[in-house]
Length: 116
Image: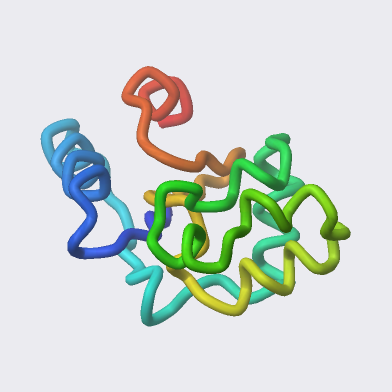
């Protein structure tokens, strides 16, 4: 079963969910703000994704900017980054697509089509 972590007020998430519905793809919707992935899960997703860890951060988010993470991340260890990501779902790039074989951050239709 495909999992999609989303935030209900996010326009990109709405677009991604519409795309899934239009393509008749079944998915489990998870509210990233209320039920965000824990550190162990994020580590698994990161490994499965093959992406740099920084791609898991919601760099356009209000919390990211308030915490001035663009300045702090380069100095942080990977363990510190995982702990930070696990502390608040609003720090995680969304939508977060989790399939049996891969994990994608953000919504790029071509990437999702290939993954699904």
